Length: 68
Image (cartoon, rainbow, N blue to C red):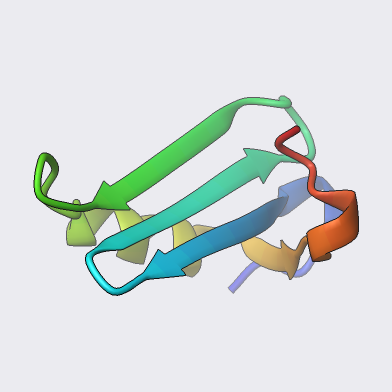
């Protein structure tokens, strides 16, 4: 696991009865990755595991979402 803030990814989630979204934003590059599970999308579990293994993840607060 990496612990440098340069290797951090900020994240936010949305969870409903039939919908899940996890969004990650790289501190270093500013790139955003969205992983969704819903009636129209299958969750890419391998990609989710890769992000969680490779980055130090930091949660976003609801009132200050990094994705707005």
